[in-house]
Length: 108
Ligand code: FES
Image 1 (cartoon, protein in one colour):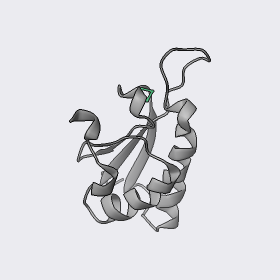
Image 2 (cartoon, protein in one colour):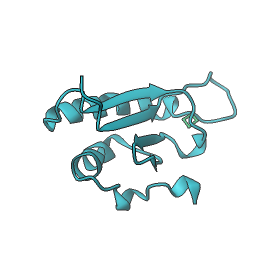
Image 3 (cartoon, helix red, strand yellow):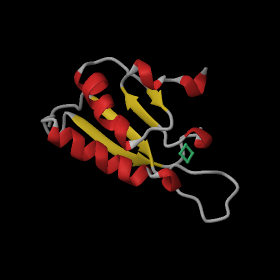
């Protein structure tokens, strides 16, 4: 099995109702993860070339859903399903982080 070219990590952490902190899970992260999987398939990305995994909390919960793309270690905040195609086209297929999504803003 070849080493994956990219690893997309989607925070899918959820918190119980009434918890004072927001979570990516309550902001639609599960659907987002599925949208990445479906989008990669629809765009013809070979299976195994890009892996998509959910994760526990990555830290910037107020900016979720949080998505990190490796090996670049590019962080995307407030990712929507509408952003998925753009990330696949420009970052995964094009090789450049999506400037209009303000990558790594959470760290600036
Ligand atoms: S819950 Fe997603 S970053 Fe904390």
